[in-house]
Image: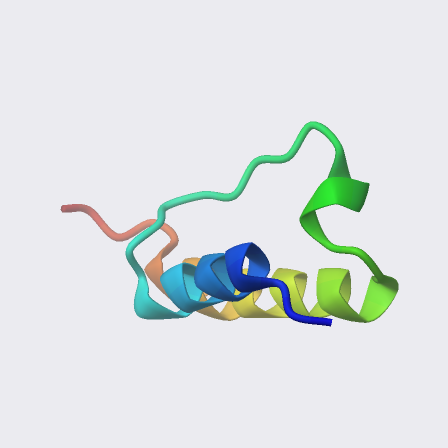
Length: 55
């Protein structure tokens, strides 16, 4: 299934152009567990390496 919005979010997270991801309804963000876990893993990699770093 093509999900351009989700793909754009993943690209933004990986590119470091977002500082946080918030969701009120997680089922709208990631349609299945695989997508959800993949996004969480990417956030941990990107945000984790920048955590505590001052601008």
